[in-house]
Length: 362
Image: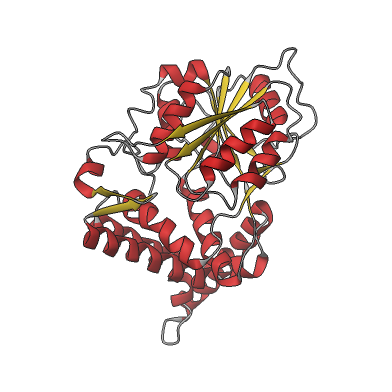
């Protein structure tokens, strides 16, 4: 996997225009600092499309203020959500329509970039003839308990996504991340577009999969030194995030599928430890010791590669139990509510089922 900023990547003769599309819904506490990091880019032809998606906390005024202080910022205000759309996907769709760049970079409102991020990403895409790029990014540490769950989540997603196969045109493996999805405008036009995935909960991953299936030349880059975000500020925030990621993505809006997936995940994660219990044959306990050692080594490697705190990453049994608890909670809430609440809007389960497009690797 290439690294952003690695030596030997030639810069293009002409830098294409890049439009950074940032959807924001009630992000007044995080948007300004994150936008400042984007405006600090050393890229020569950059546009920022700030999409205020029905905010009620002052984000709208902040977007206008940022636009008034920098000509590269184009404000876009959405006051109404059309029927049959998820709010974020509608915001991305409208932002793409307003953008003027040859390339579109979709990125969440709370993400921070190093100053050379866009330039390095564009140089890599041009050098490798990619028309879609997503990245591995750094998750800023928070608390021990939260970090155990986040580390477990990232390790599971990274394994299931088969990142090493994404750039292989003969493989079905794909990847997309809301923090950084860079796509050439012509490539996006060859897909079914945001209207095709307008009710897809896994919007970022679905975009990457849609591009790959349309013949996109896709890549994943190591950008932990360039792109960072605080995924969840608290366990409560992670629980709310899992309300859509668990029931909506991992469970595909089916509690039966969600429960079976959780049981399988628990078995895989805890089997080596369970094999160490007294009473098992010596050979089984021996296998348990080997398996536990391999699991700890894998966690240590993941901690190094993903720049995660070591101790929370090694505490994978705690992270696994916490993560599974949050997933099962999401299924219970989905059943009780009859749908998923996202950005303050309740989307009924039956409506969301008509819009499932992403084929999950889980």
